[in-house]
View 1 (cartoon, helix red, strand yellow):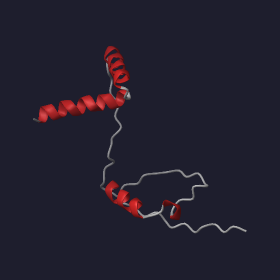
View 2 (tube, rainbow, N blue to C red):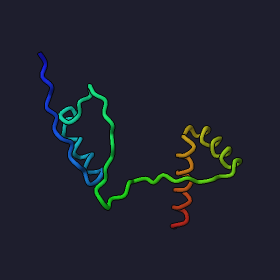
View 3 (tube, rainbow, N blue to C red):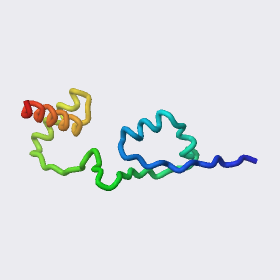
View 4 (cartoon, helix red, strand yellow):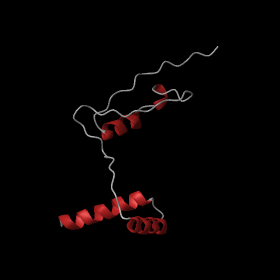
Length: 95
């Protein structure tokens, strides 16, 4: 007869850095039953913004085609390429 392991409740983290530090020193099997499916939800403390924000942007079809072709050549997802281009432009503008 096998006994189910008593799981510890997951702590709440204020930052991603705090969570990373926690998991580097703790065994996840004490907190998660990997034999069961789990729905993961990320909760941030009140007043803490999510690290990314989903937006919608309309681009001319030709521009999107060119971006996708560039992404294929660089072997990156086209949305990642768009973020890279925006980040480079922002850095140049800040200088």
